[in-house]
Image (cartoon, rainbow, N blue to C red; front, top):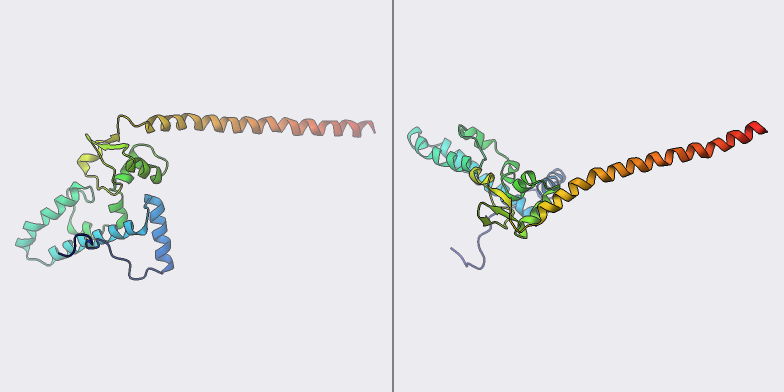
Length: 203
């Protein structure tokens, strides 16, 4: 079992961590989903490899045993939204890390509650502004099930919805002011050129 102070690692580093293409792909994934460190990405890859291993082991079993154990795996994956209700083991083997990261609470909050970046959503989750049903959840990596997805909302005392509405109303005003300033500068250039034409005609 080991010492409880030092729990077993739930992630594995990639075999070629210094590969340039792999590093660029990891950085892109980190920015897309707002991950804090690469360790969160490695956890997703490790969990995905565990699920794939279960699917491969089911494919090697006899048909009677497979028919008994396969629905257990498929129902658990369908409950968190990784596969559809009529999916097969081939669909499980085709899953990637982005499918698993898209079920994080941080990602669901970004898409559903109107945050501009996943980093803003992460901060809101950590500071206790997000609730799932009647309970607050401050873990960005929490896996949201299909049943819980519709019950994700702001806490009643949170002021973030007012701030988001305020920023949405101010954005078009700023664009309009920029257009007016551009139009105001145009006549000045024309008026500056007209005296030159008059002096040249008098000469």
